[in-house]
Structure formats: structure tokens, C-alpha cells
Length: 361
Image (cartoon, rainbow, N blue to C red):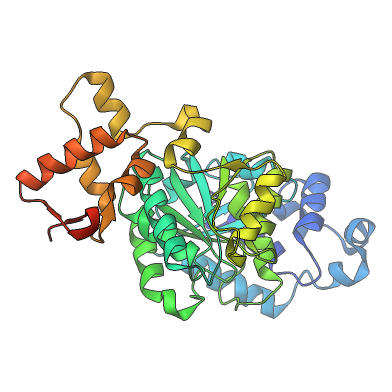
């Protein structure tokens, strides 16, 4: 990544009022590195960004913001990634409007891993939350990093599920990385900063604002190979993410629901428009074949004993039935039942009334 001196120029540009990402990319195309832009004459700059923007390139407020950002980036686990850095996500770089800077807190290496966006309603049903968490855990177990937006409902559930497996998760924020929104997810954000990655294009201290979230949504889809919508009303912001994914050439997936539920109508609309209908994690992993690396597949290929431990990892600690486990794993009911029996005999799973099973804590 850039040294402090080089990074300061990038930060300076993004904190200049009147300069959007498109204008900054235009200046970079004309002048090269940020230091060349900042040393250019006002007359040179006005040819490309106009008098108002060029007059604001040097202010005390901007210098203060630069110093604060550099101080933040020096802290352990923090990084600011620029368009010129090798760590900048390649998929995002290929989109129409890549951010000039990314503020990152946590595991920076996740930016280079195969990933899947999982999004949905903030007011999700109990089933929607369960689906998001369990599907995300299955994808994360398969080696996919789960990208979502740290919102209540489906987003939070997807992050929680992903944190339970090796793929882990990236939370893309509509605020600065030092601002947690919504506050109810403060504990989850802290967990992600330790075991996953918090990511934002917005400067430090940036509060939540309605117009930030559509911009955030294009990053959620732009970072990922595909986008799964778990539950969404017709006016849901998740559909903005799905549309951005389609425009970026990503696969779009949707989980169907009841025809009577308002929170299914968005998913049904996506399916009518060509999104792939999803009933199990395998439906998505099959489409993203190059990234399909589940414990189940590797064990079957090696001829090892059936992976009851892998099934246990996917169960969580809530009661779950055989059909749900079949959906998560892509395995036949007979195989899942056999693994459950082995786990029950080992004292690690308890059979419950109604055909449910639960891990023994």
C-alpha cells in the first residue's frame, strides 16, 4: 500500500468539497498521481473541474481530515486502500464507479477472496433470519466470503452465519468505519472487525445518511461474484443491490417464499426477471462452480468417513429439521439422517419432538 506521503494525497482529494469520485478519476487520468494534481496550477485544474472545486483544494479543514485519516490508518488492523494499490479488489475495480479509497478495519486479505453478497429485508421474518444465517454459514464453510451491509434483519443474520466458518464476512458500511449504524449492531460490528472486515468508502466520522446507502449497495454487489436476496419487499433497498449486481454482470439469486407475504414479492419479482431460484445452498454453489469447496465435497472425493462434524458445524444451536439440513448441505435425507444418528449416539446432538434436532451445548 501507499506510504504516508503518497496516501496523504489520495485522502486529500477525497476530502475536497466539490470533487466526486468521477471528477477525481478524471484528474488522475490527466495528471497521474495525486501529488501531481495537488501541485498543479489553478488554471490547469480549472480546465477539468471548474473554478469552485479547484479553489477548495487547499483548506485547513482538509489538512486536518488528512492527518486524522493517516493516524487512523497507522493503528493495528486498519488500512486505507487506494485505486493504485495491489490490495484493491479486482472485481470492484472493473465496475463503472469504483471508489477512490477504501477504509478497512480487520482482515484485509478477505478483499482478495471469492465472495458472495447476501442481502435482504431489515424487517425480516423469523424464517428469513434463519435462512440468511444458515445459508451464509454454508457458503462460508464452502470458502466464500459473505458480503453484506450490517443492517438489521437479513444482513446481520448473514454476517453472524458467516462468522461461524472459515470464509468469514465483509460488512460494507454507509458510514465511516469508526461509526456503527445501526447502534443495535455494535457488538456484531466489533466481532466483524476482529474476525472479518469492516469496509467503507466514506471518510472517518461520516454519519448515516439516506443517500449513502444506495452508494454502499453498489459496493456490496461489486465486491462479489454473485448476489443472493433472501427476503425483500418490492420497495426494498435489497433490490437496488440486486439491480446493481445485474448491471455489473454478477449472478443474481433469490429465495422464494409465500405468495401471501409482502417480504416475498421482491424475490418473486427478481425471479420473474431472470434471477436464479434458490432452494438450497447447493443451488448457488453449483452456479459458482469454481468456488465450490465444501467440506462435504472434499471428504467425498477423498473417500473419507461421512463428515458428521461438518454437519454439526452447520446446525448452529437452534432446533432444525432434516429438510432444512438437506437444503443447507445439498445432501440426501438418508445421508443427513445417518450423520444425525451418529452424532446422537456420540452425545453431541439430541432428537427433539416433531422431528427436530439440536446440538448439545
